[in-house]
Length: 321
Image 1 (cartoon, rainbow, N blue to C red):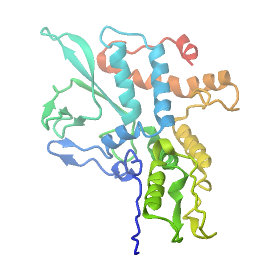
Image 2: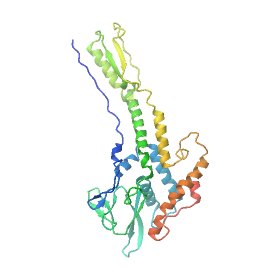
Image 3: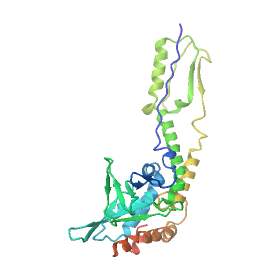
Image 4: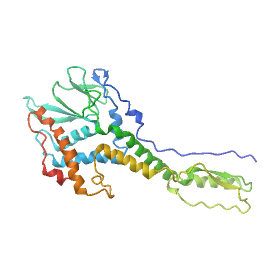
């Protein structure tokens, strides 16, 4: 009786994005009345959720700034939070001056940095809508706070841009491990049978048992009874050593350190419980070297607004860490 080979495989977890979606760095070319950013803002937004350390580092900075921010009649705490997050993620943040019918400023409203563009006409700004239309802001009504770039002056770039490869590497290591656990240890071998003493029903049952070991059946034992089988009639031939040698922890730790170095956030503040030194000492250093300069940058809003809209309580810096 002639038997045919039956082979099957399982789907892979999919990464958040390919690095090429962000790293196509270039000049800000004009496109239909506005300048294109020098890199993919959509890619940066997706990368925010690719790695826990990347997201957490940005959230830590935003949360501590929020804890010390003094709410103003023109800028609510919620609007300030959106403004800061845009600045940290995209290196660009925008505030729109909203006037009442008397021409008085009643609110400073954040404009989403992911969809806000600089117009090619008179330094104006516009908002790209989901329908593909463009909403043009009134000239002079937009504040553009940007992180300076050495290659162009139209848009800012986030400070962590150099660490994105480490963000994606960390994600890839996690996806590899996830695939390994979802598929179980059976994903890395060939199950080879040469004995003729098996019935077709026995072989079908064995294939069914192997398929069921995916997902919830991971790492279950498999019993095979073959009274007349030969020693080499049933073999498991490894394709590769997938259970080790992948240096999972090394990759995770090294890529984590790269990400935290780019954000300059101490591991202790991130909730990483290891022997990294005194929490109080690094918190004070973090506040002095990172948070206070960031606060000063955000105070650029005041000169544009003509009054002290952005103000922080000094004592809240240490209290919030």
